[in-house]
Length: 334
Image (tube, rainbow, N blue to C red; front, side, top):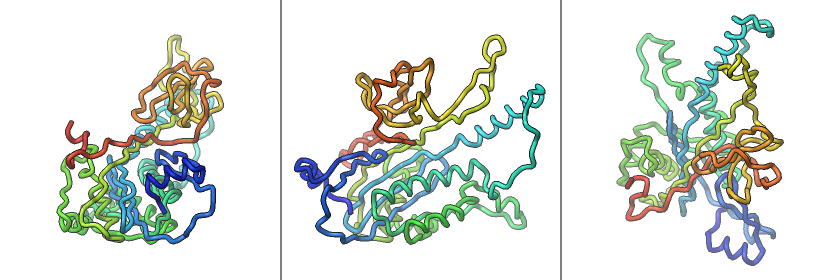
C-alpha cells in the first residue's frame, strides 16, 4: 500500500528504504520485510477521450494520483506517409519486394489500436506501483443510425476498440463499466462541475470524471481531497525508414529514423553534467541530442555519450502541475 511522504522520508534517512522514480512517480523500496501486508481496495477510474484522457487512482481513504494524458494521434498520418513512400518507390521502379496480399490485422486499424494500447500501457504501469483491485471505465456510446450497419460499426474509433480494451483490463482486477449519464449523476451528486474546455490542464477537464468513477467503487469522500495532477505525453519514436520522404540536394535520399542513439534507447532518461536530467533523442555525427523530460524541448544536439549517465528506460514525458491555490490551479488562472 502507498505510504505518507513523511514516513517515506524517515525510511530513506534511516536506510530502511531506497528511493527511485518509476515513470515520473516517486517510489521507495523497503530494504526489510514490511510490518504488515494488509491491503485495501484501490480503484482506477478512466475517462477516455480522443485528445485528452483522465486517470485517477483512489482508495477509500486517499486519492493517490490524478493523471491527465495526451492521446496518441499521430499513427494515422504515419501510416499514410509510409503508404505514399512505398507507392513512390514502385513508381520509380526501385528494386523492392513484390506486393503481398494484405494480412489480417485483427479488425482494428493501426490508429485505433494505438489509442487503446496507450491507455493499457498507463494502466499496466499503475498496476506495477499500486495494488489495483478494480478498474472502472466510462463506457463509450457512439450515435447510431437505423439501418446503417456500416456506419454504426465504424462511427467512432473509440467505440471500435473498447471491447478489445475491456477484455485486457480483466488482467488487472474487476472491471466496471459506467454510462456517460451515470458519470454525470455521480459528479452532480457531490457538487462537481466539468469544464467545457476539454484541452485545458485542470482537474475539472477530465480528472473530475475519473475521480467520480473511482469514488463510486471505493467511496470514502464527498469532495476530492487531492486535485493535483500529473500530465503525461507519449514520446514519439520515429521507426527506422528506408530513407526520408523528401530528397536532399543532389537528389540524395538520406536514411531516417531508428530507436537507438549511440547504443542508448531513445526516450531513456539520463543525467548530463551541464543539462541535468534529460531524455535521449536523435543522433548525428556521433553526438546525442537531449530533450527536456517536461516539455520535450531540445536542449542540445552535441552531447557526448561518455558524459551521459543512464538512469532508466522511458517512453513518455511527465509534468507535475503546481499545487492548487484557493481551489484554482496555476494553469487555469493563466
